[in-house]
Amino acid sequence: MNPIQKWLSSVFLAGSALFAAASAEAPAVKAPVTRVALFKNGYALVVREVASAPADRFLLDESIVPIHGTLWFAPGDGLSVTGVSRSGKVPNRNPFADLTASYENLDVTVTLKSSGSEASRIITGTLVRLGEPPSAVPPLPQQPSVWHGGRSPGETAAQGTGFLAVRQKDGRLVTFRASEVASIESTGINSEIREQKRMLLVNRAGMAGKPLVFSYLAHGLTWAPAYRIALGPEAKLRIDQSATIINDLEDLKDAEISFVSGFPNLQYAGVASPLASGMTFQTFSQQLNQMEYARLNGQPCVLGQVVMKNSFARNETAAVSPLPESGASEDIHFTSGGKVSLAKGDVSYRTLAEATADYERLVEWEIPDWRNEWGVLERNFNRPNGDGNPDGDLWDAVRFRNPFPSPITSAPIEIVDGEKLLGQSTIQWVNPGDDALVRITKALTVSGNRIETEVPGKRELITIGGWNYRCPVVEGTVTLRNFRSNAAKVVVKLRFSGELLSADGSPKSRLLETGVYSVNPRRELVWELTLEPRKEVALPYRYRVLVRD
Image (cartoon, rainbow, N blue to C red; front, side, top):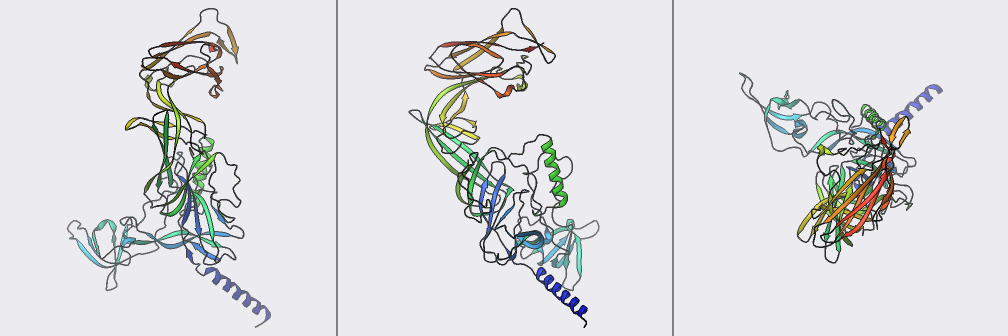
């Protein structure tokens, strides 16, 4: 053998050895969920851990659908992760979706339906699969509502096959349509089925025996908060907070759980990672295009109502962050919920917190501004079907200061007094130590009306942007009547467009942001007064407004 042949032979042998090493099947391990942080609209931050890697190169046998850009591994230095297709077993949750998988390799007696003049037929033997098992395609992230026509990206036809095959004892193979089957008799059914699924092949030198942690954002796990106010004597109340966990992601066992509140900005919430189970190039491209379409059309990308209290980062190998907590995240709040074990499809309720606070009963009246951006009065503006009081309703309400060390998040709230249910309302975000006002029911024993008229006389004309505007002065009066046998504290919030000239009763005045596109500033007057029993009070005010001719 000449030197060139020896060199070629050594190269071939080295290449064969490398190919054999690369082709050797890596051991597969599970990576259970150890921690989850639940947002309120169906998303969760999921943390999985492998306690001890079986080798430097191994497979993660988990079907995951991370949101694009949120999948991170620790340790990450020198790490490579490849999505590969492997055959694996999963629980047979729906036996009738794929009859081949349910009876594969089992002895069966199949009765076929009669057809026309042909009598029913019985086939006995072993049910076998022809070809590869179907690919598992878990649900992809919730899509923005911009898809039109046909099947949504990531949605696939029902798994299974239209034909079944039975190998008889004499070796003959009989195939027939699944729609022809009248019944199948067998001694059992497969509790697990084979599926082709994407696994993650992890490769890192020196990984064997060390832990691997990875985290990602996923859709299918959420929480629903609720509050209850119990009114008590001596102007004391108790407020309770509950959380209902809804799990449609996967089985959880002893997972640490946190409840998230705030407004996190997640631009790629509707796009799955290219490493997600069942993800294809076409689906990834479609989801990116939908996200861009939603962005160009002004659709928000925030998660919904949601300050960092309990960090997920426990050590330097944590996948959520490679650094310790900064302590400066005031606007995303994590509340610890302890450990939870919850099967997929189950729902769990638990009480999160309780506290007491002083409160006061009052009547709240919000009087809307019915002028449009040009100052023109439109009393039916934005009134559904023209129903209701154009000047707003008076509400019996309770006001208190948030006693929790954390914010009150937007949620339904129930108000009770002993065994009496007084009503249910919605409480909006309330910071710790800030005042909250919760409506209970309409106030029927305290009434009010508002009257406005233009002051007669010469009306000045002003030209703005080529348009002529009148500049009248408006006089108004807010009248309140208390039919109760006891005094009532009333808070009146009057909104109007224009320049305030005067107002009796020393109300607080503030400028509103809603008038940014109006020729008139939008303002709100707030009166707080105590209305004595069987008494009436009138609160006059004046303002100037620009009205387009």
